[in-house]
Length: 174
Image 1: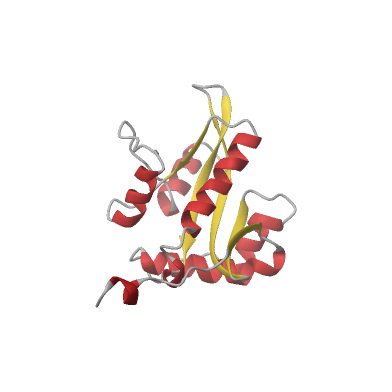
Image 2: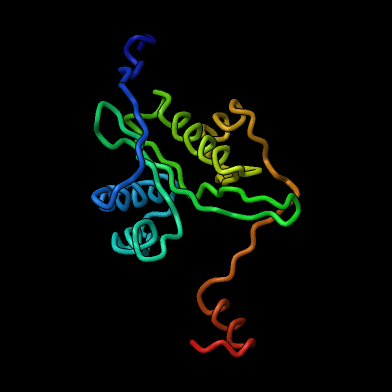
C-alpha cells in the first residue's frame, strides 16, 4: 500500500464549547475512550452525571467539542486546579479524545491548543493531564508540543470502601 492510499482526507476542524445537547455524544465518546484505553465496561458515569458535572447547578468541569466538517469528532474535558507551590490556578485536562477516523488530522492538537488558550486567558500557571504509559501516539504528540513528563510524582487514589473507611475514621456520616 502506498502513502496516498493510507492518507486520511483532510477535514475542516473547529472547536466549540460543549452545550447541553452534546451530553449524549460526550458520554458516548467517554465510553469509546475507555474502550480505546482497554477499560471496556468500566464507565459508571451515566449521561445525566456528565450533564450535571458540566451544566448542573454547580458545574465542576467544562468541555469543548472538536468538530470535523461540522460533526462531533472529539472532545476535551477539563477543570480548575490550584498549586500552593506557585500560588496560582491551573487546569487539569481530564480527558482528550479524537475518534479513530479523525486522528492524524490535527484535531487533537487543536483541542490541546484550545485548552492551553483557556489556561492562559485565565492566568493559569500550568496545564496538566495524565496519559497511560502505553499510549505511545499520544505521548509522541505531547512531546512534539513540548509537554514534559512529571517523573517526581506518583498518583494515589482512594475510592470505594477505602474512601468510605477513611471518611468514617474522621466521623463523616455516610
